Image (cartoon, rainbow, N blue to C red; front, side):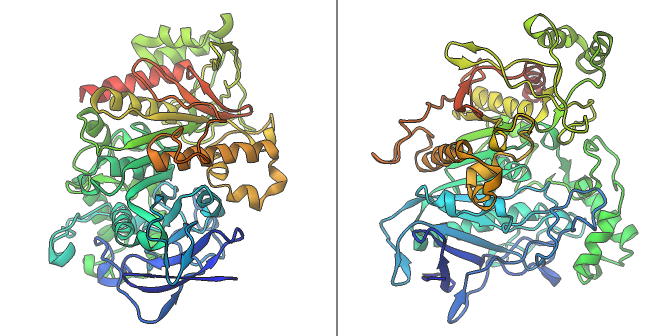
Length: 565
């Protein structure tokens, strides 16, 4: 293991060379003080420095979370054997910049990509093998992955938490959404320290998957994150749909927290709750049914309902869709996208009578539009379900069917996606988000859809997060038996698009004569009235023109509803 040395503001770090020895990894770097004891449920504070040389060769602990055996809902990461701790505020850096004499080339100024993991804000770990940054860094970017608080430690509010005195130099700080505040503190760390790794602190891209994509969207809307990044990539996120359609108010989140401390923990006050064992506290929350009635029970995952993101008045000042509708978003370049088979909804009964009843119940006055959209090629197409006939994910209580609807004819040199009675709720939420951006801001996003299955397996599914092995490349290297040469070609194409976007704001942008994407299809931006997207599928990157028609209807309804708020 070849050591690599850098010196940052906190002190000296000893990292290591990766398998590709051009890439250096520095792992488990503290960016925040341990949020334990009296610092539990407070805004994070910058980590202190150290003397001597600190080893940075291993990942730090994941945030406290349930294992698969402990979470009967089955929504944990299943990290048996991995250390978890409240003392989790660490990050990791992979850099291709040559390092000598304790620093990288000061003139390197490589684009920086900061990663937020998914997990419903309830679990996650930067040590997840899908998120290793070595292969992506090989495209000429500095990759940073951030460990942040989740579940009851990261998304908790209480009437006695007011943020007074919790900010820098004793000022005030937000009183909720601590996981998002952790991410923001990591971005401040990047601004101060990333030049030592060859990164450009003025060219930062934030990107994330699932709830990590919702983190990206939250930073887009947060006035506290202004100026901390220039570009953003939302992968397999909800957009302005699903959980992002309406967040809890601070009062509602505080009601949940108050009931938890008083009725579930039996604590006399918040101070006593801060002294309780972290694992016991988490298990007490996991076992609770929803602690607040309201229009938020779309998932059946009670932990997510009891540990919600909220409009706290500081980090988030309004609901996400309202920020987009009013154009109050931090200016940046944006890529947004989904996979073909995640969070699919549709009629359980595919008979003509069942379709008609479902259309009337779900779409009301637009029932005939829905039925027309289902009549591809002269009639409603059949659709393949997942192996057990259920969806790949949550369905917002609108029925379920794992629709495929990927293949189709060719028109104007672009694939035309076929239709079926199902619709992709995440695609609808992202399409509505893009429409709001196009209508109210100067942002013109790039959109993608990922439909590839490992090895091109015709019986496989492009489910939630299935693009991750291709964006990072690490899982392909670790599981070569699952992937073929076409998978590697697609991964390289996606990594080049992502890296070029991080460098220039344009996935087609050529940073230099060698790293341009002249040999890859041109990725067109979204524009008003169109639904152009890059499909990463069986045939490699291909621009496609239309989404599933029912999905378009849902997107239009959400866009209209949010625009009218």
